[in-house]
Image (cartoon, rainbow, N blue to C red; front, side):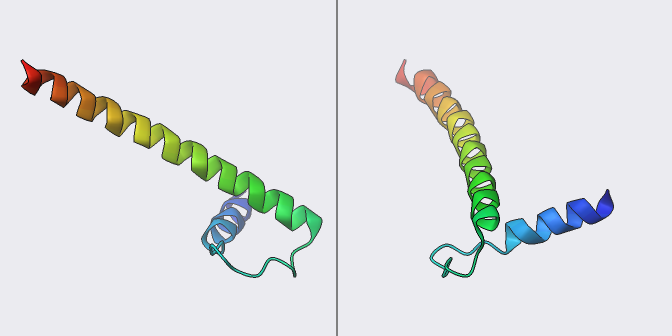
Length: 63
């Protein structure tokens, strides 16, 4: 199980935006897409939390 986690961690770190993808297999491309979609969801979630916090602060100071 630890091997799976370290491999997953390496895969996530190896993604570089703009890199040549032509050497990747269809399976590798699909896996990469899943990883990137998960990251987008994570970014969206933290963005929403930060936006909610900012909106709450704005509401306090609008009085």
